Length: 325
Image 1: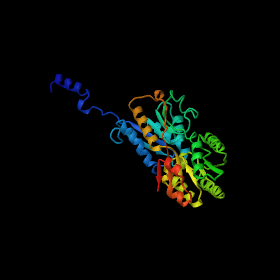
Image 2 (image 1 turned 90 degrees about the horizontal axis):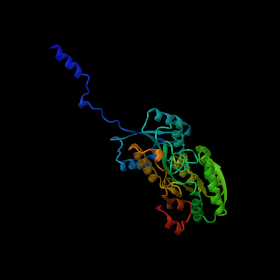
Image 3 (image 1 turned 45 degrees about the vertical axis):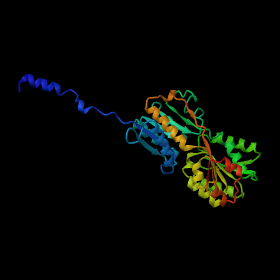
Image 4 (image 1 turned 180 degrees about the vertical axis):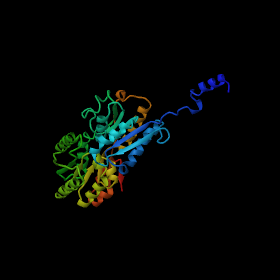
């Protein structure tokens, strides 16, 4: 080979090959939640639907890296740190305020999309509803404000009940606001209210035992992902101790709970998926106003009512979004 040809060949060896052009990296969503995968599966479908509406299909042009704390909130900081270390494109925490707070503590740069019932300004997730100003934004549904309506509905179902029991998780971030709203709702109707705390399976069962000591005393369960992940167990306790109970999500009524009134959580997860998709397309959380979700629903389990010997008033049946026979 001539010297001139050799030098020319050596020069071309350092040039990039067009046919080997690097493919764009698929974005990764870090999905962080305080509950477990199985009882949340149907809600995650809503999240995927929201992504689909923005053109994102899991496995095709986006990956989702799930991290579940399985009801152990103390694991959330470690799980959040894992997602930060992976340098995911966005961290989504729909339906889990503890997860949102853990993500916020773990990173000030990776976008965070939350969806929960705690006031995001009061707990430090955003600077304001209209101008979040940081790396987090999302969906907010006012579970605290709905407590007054919940008491009204349960009182219509059980008009002779004058003493109510409320069950709340003392470790939940908005516990104080929940209790204050419950007390106000009970006072408006002239009802007595006893507040019990439960953050373990044993404490939940003890609360039902206490309520059962007063036959006919209704129980209202405070909003909390820990309770939601145990809805089947809680519904079975309601049946075992014959305690008429009201919940914040339709998933409880579907599991055998008597009555639920609260946000349409599937729709909330879908909205969180849509917001996550918008972030992947380049929008900045600081400039994306927090969405106030106003879609609420009431579900009555007529089969459970019958087993408890409760006659459902026609007015409640007319108001219900769904009656489970």
